[in-house]
Length: 472
Image (cartoon, rainbow, N blue to C red):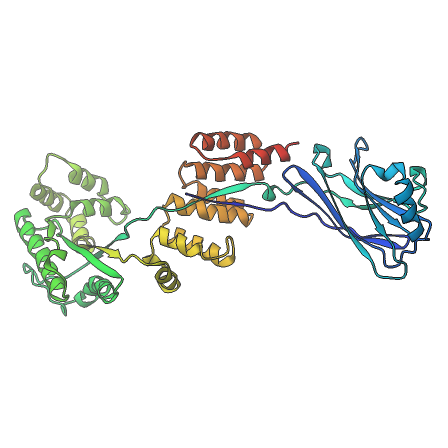
């Protein structure tokens, strides 16, 4: 399903002109469906028409180069006797083909709301509208006066384009959190001692997260997985035993704090020696701190060496560098990584609207969309929901496209282009890029993108018409 929106054709600025005893107000020109619509109010309050006379007012569209002219419907304002004459003998030939007629009641307030609709012409762009005034009622154009009402502005491209939003599909709200805790164990021991060294602070990295989840009725914890790492000093088999037991001990400790099913806590995993972490730390070091950095990296990367020979070679060949690593790098290699996977509940629309105000990250992309549909499209609150969707789901093409459409409506084309760079190549994304190209007057690029979108089944008729209108 696609959510379609189209801007209305902008109304042109009005001009107010006063000639003799009448005035023209609220002049405007609008365009829609290949029609040009001219409207204005003819204010007759101070106009006096003799009983046997009439006044004629005829709007005329004129191209600026003087090559084109189009007369619109005439307004005939008659006196009492002249109205009878017209009924008996017919209208003067100059006006008979297209006119409106109104009887003037002298001395009274009187306004006539004028409207005429004609087929739009390419030369209408930037043309001017005059009103021809036959003030003697002669039916003779040589005795008329003309007053400028205003110019027809070029069509507003924002009024011609069509954007297509993407309705996200319902999806499971499965999330994962990853972190690292640096638990300190007594030498050669694996029991977790919460009050030892900085353990209380490090343990809270895990427990604070779980505390929030367990207390929230909208969250269900699927799995907690702990992976322990040891540093490379000491024999490999000894490190394997320590890392395995310490990871299991930490898993058991955390499990004991919560009334969660045992199946939530996955079997502990361990990496006996964290050579990968050591290599990254060494590679990032300055030579002033580690003079034999390249040689140490060569030993670490040597595929023919087992862990224990590697460690002995580092210690014997580069003792000063080794001592620096032992003191400043190895402690950080002894860590416990934790992964917590969890689900958010599914919400009804009313529940989603409530959750959005305080915990929008608990909503799925579809639930955020549904909340937005309760708001006026492109209002401030609607736009905020679309921005929130990208904040929560920064890589979701649907969210990026919909927010790009908002940015286009706000005339922020730079933001739209940035969002669309990551929005994929769906028909809706291609259409949005084409609209940006139209607004930047890159019509060849726009045509190419629209053709690609059409090949994917998207209706791009409106934007193709926009290009035709803007390039006439």
